Image (cartoon, rainbow, N blue to C red; front, top):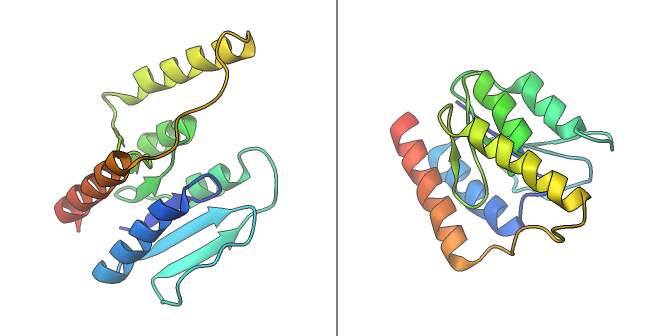
Length: 148
């Protein structure tokens, strides 16, 4: 099992939690982004810079994900594709995407996108708070304990 991170939109504080987990468990992790990232010097953590463009990082993640891998992403369509490949996705707020909840989440995302397109809703999600960070850390630890 490896951890794949959709790193373009992943908050730095979440990346730090992931770096610590990767080092602690000697687990391979790959971060994907279209801009340079600074990562710890360890053989377990790698960075793949992708070209700029819509869904380029997502496409690379889908190419590399294998059954049993864990993907960290807030991108619900990417999470849906990950689940289709028998892997797991967790968002930076600690939401575990499953076969049971992903279609509902995808439908809600599409509905909210329509509302934003019509100007009914503006803005995006709120900033991460301490509770979000704790929920992410708990979800990650629970998943890794169960699957490592």
